[in-house]
Length: 474
Image (cartoon, rainbow, N blue to C red; front, side):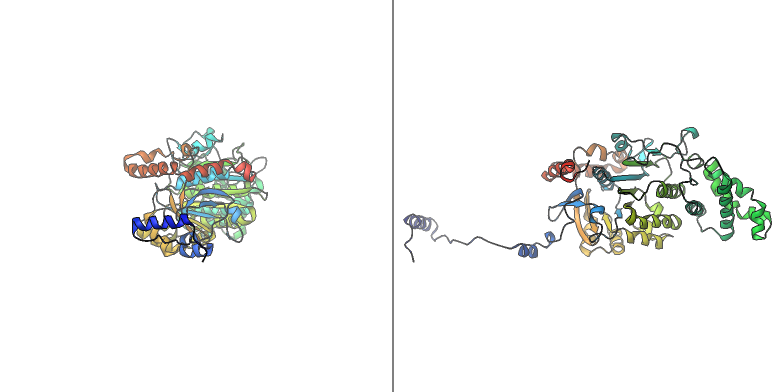
């Protein structure tokens, strides 16, 4: 053994005198990445990559959480569609808005929002639209007829087959039952006659109603029945469509499509806040807007499109409307479309008359985000979505701004972060300050304040603001 250094001997003797023992020298602890992952399992799950939109951070690992359906589509994500679930006051609206604002920083992104909520006569997205210099497309049956924006279900941009399917959907939603064969025949011949004989202008719903009330003799001859029989077959159909022409829903779909609707704007907002959310008008409205957009907005170009629908249970819970949107979602992969459905409770859509259609749409949503729910609802949600047990148990304990994210089986608890620049545009629901919701508002404000003091937010904001330099976006 080599001679020991005198200084070491003096130090050892001094330590022994003070503590009565000699201090033991230990080797430093060394570990590998694989060993660390085995010990700290919550941090071992792989992330979603580092390209896309910043959502916030993973609660267990502290890593930044980045999500983009267009970047992930393929091996990591079989479909680009997204379902957002949760009760009011937990941060769904803030997530939607920040997601859209951050997606708009990419030059090749375009977004349509069906804004079904609002207050003070404007939709919830009105402030963001104003900030971006965009005028929302406001559909309002109470406005003066001359000032209304109109979408024509018989717009020549929509194929003849698409027009007839849309007309059937409108009628079936209003009647609450499938259209019988005789009524369907009356509608088909009236639609064909109007399309063949209307020249120099767009056919409109009023033309269909007139022809249903006054069918042509050749229609009866084709079926070898009396003319009065054909008129009787089309009576219910005429009464339903008359509601959109001369009833409580007039002024939105009873004329040619309004000229000047900008379908090339990066953000297009349809303000539906003047429509009673609990009436049959809402699913009818969404069906017409959806089909009109399918034929006029979605094009096979290089742009990536996002179609965000609030109160989406109106779509998923109606068999006929759901069938229209199923076709749209199937086209999504080929045309670069991501459909985002925002729903309060999964029971709103899986226990209704459209359970089969709802299941088909849910299956196409490879991304699911679940905010806080009560225990019973969380268990039902977990069973339908196939969430792991640990995630189901966590859902009732989530605080505002936190959610369980399931991206094609990659399940994480994520804390959504909002930057200072976004906060004035995101937390805009003044109804939350009313007495019935003061507790939820206080909780949400507390979470926002906590996030503002979190050093991770500074990194989030810096990365959001530097997208142009790092990823070539605008």
